[in-house]
Amino acid sequence: MTFKYEITNIQNPKTPNLFRIRALRDIPRYNVKAGDLGGYIENENNLSQEGDCWIEEYACVGLNARVFEHARIYGCGIVSDDAKVFGNAQVGGAIAYNNASVFGEARLYDNAKVCNNAQIYGNAKVYNNGWIHGSAQVYEDAQVYEDAQVYGNAQVYGNAQVTGLSRIYYKAVINESMKISGPSYITTPSRIYYSDGITAFLDKHGNLIVNGTSHDIEHHKTLARLKLP
Image (tube, rainbow, N blue to C red; front, top):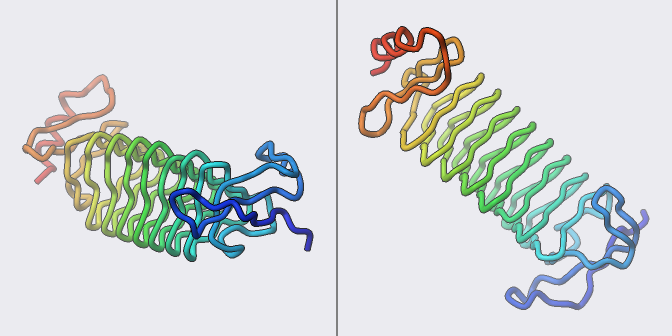
């Protein structure tokens, strides 16, 4: 096996058990040239010597965390504990820790977090302070952002969006093209009305929130009020 990088003796100024890496070959996928310095790792198990995976200048990967295949950690991204980032996934300016997984084409960035046993995969994006934890899953083309949280055994997938201080948890399922905006608390599918591109739900104060457009919006509002608990 041809080695892709070496571990230098340059210590991280804040975490001295982490050492900077140096590329031993070009990685065109990420515009890395042989000799370029990368980010910080604790040991060679943190970053595979195979594939195009790379950790950029200010990013850190430590403990038993693993970055492999073609994944990229950039910005001030942190991967720690037993977390895994692989496939073509990217983590930038965000944190993956505990036993979390980010894979496929997923993106975690802009102060987002994933932890516990949560998974982000497919083409999903979590950003702008989004937080996925517990055993939650966010996948396909879903997006979670603007301080929203998904946790418990909740699932967000399809083209769904969860935003604005929303809390999706317990056994909630947000899918298709649903859009949940906060502040709201969704625990089960029965707490959502979805039809003809319209998503309706009750916010934490009991007010009906309707997202989407329709020529018959009042009809949908009436049906939503009948359905929602």
